[in-house]
Image (cartoon, rainbow, N blue to C red; front, side, top):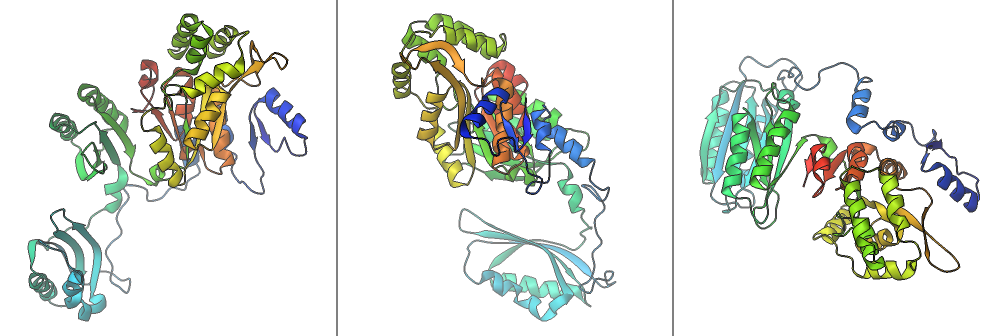
Length: 462
């Protein structure tokens, strides 16, 4: 049962704990502070795309992506003057220096509002040079004279005139962004020429236009980002499925996202623990120390493949640990944790960037808290093994709510609610079948070195 509102308000600690153990997660909601009950939809099993679809029904019809472009107007807001003329100018220079652009634009100063600068873009080149692009409209008599003076100033600054185009048609900027996506390509240690050739071939063969290519990696070229425009007859799902085949053949990771504000608005990152943040399965490590490794490992592998019910498999594995000293077992496991390469650096960078982080594991709380401490995570949720308070031995049972696949999804939504962000602003990372509901609920779900079943149902894979 998921309770919504302020069910714990006024309760003593013992009663609040009892309620949480009885009913599971609560979603704090106060209408005077929060105005949207949408979060409940996620707890009911809706994905972020479902909720986005529901929200769109509230939007007013109007000029969306692909709508008509606004006409060019004068500075006074009227129609374009008959004598106006539009130019696209491209220039380059072999060196950069302070005041360079100021000198170029001096000829435009006397003209004042009779020149409308629509776009300006400068790019610094690796060899010390630069290139500059201008889109301007001249609204006065003899517009060619104005541009001639501009080009003369460029020559004085020893800049090369690459192109001057005075037959530019009005451009529909909305249509340019209507079907725009970013493709991230990662291959370690470097992106091979073979891989790059096949990626570019796949892009070209599908009639996709490349708008921009950027290097994401600081040193070696192991990561590139392509900004592309998909044709109207190609869906992002079809494009993604084709790139998956390229990814498999080349041993590279490829991710495709819509190029919009939403991808920059992530605020919460939630990780699975076993085989994600750490390279071990905690239950297997406990079983190894308890002398029941073979039996437990067989049950674990079947569960992660989705062949066994998670709750039943957990119960069976925990029962095999009965009679062992809990403190000794967990102390040995924590002392021998092997973190996934890059985990500490990733979590440190996320924290510096202001992200909230959490580990939600179907493993056990003592280890999850150790991982939380080591990586500096904000939250840690996992199962609790019941311990006999008299002897300190494991009873073979769990205590409190079990972190099932559905509870992982609920905890993701609950943390998002506590942090004041929407579920589509979250990222979830996991590898097992029990992570699938959480991966689907998050705004960005990443299957990390995941089992085949998880990869099949995940949009993003590493």
